[in-house]
Length: 250
Image (cartoon, rainbow, N blue to C red):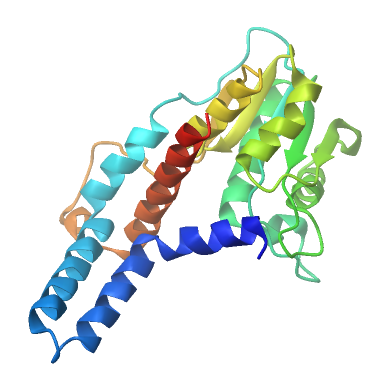
């Protein structure tokens, strides 16, 4: 089996929802054979589900990732490159490229467009492989960027990196000793910055669209578990696992 595919399967299996489903299956199977095991599996699944969907907890652990870097304002020096790290898309005939991008890719692109308006001297590098699609994510983001008014001749693509480390490896030789802005999701930025620093690139961080946007005002509904927070907690879980792998591979 392909190593990249194996990593994806393993990561999916250890996500919160997968663990909850596994525990519920265990609770059902051993309901009569081992009632105590069944009870603890059900109790653990319920507890994990509650904690994963509880907004104050989910927001606090996500904020710990997202609060590492402030929003990009303007560089004191001319910017040579704006790097947009790869995300996810689905090519669908009849849809514009902007609609084919999943939310994380679109958010990164919008942030990059904003930065380009501040620094039109910069070249843009899009990144990301096809992942089974007919087009690479780098190419799809480029198409969407052109639709949003960025000049085609200012956009370079890296079509083959499959993960953040490969993006850093492939892009670093081009941007060494340049003034570089690194755009990715706010929760992903600490891991991305560490990889680029490993390969000698001291980029300016540009966090895109943080999950947690707090103005200090909350209502009673904020303390009610909801499904969106499960997705948010899963994202934190995924990034935490990525940081652990990054630490072991130093």
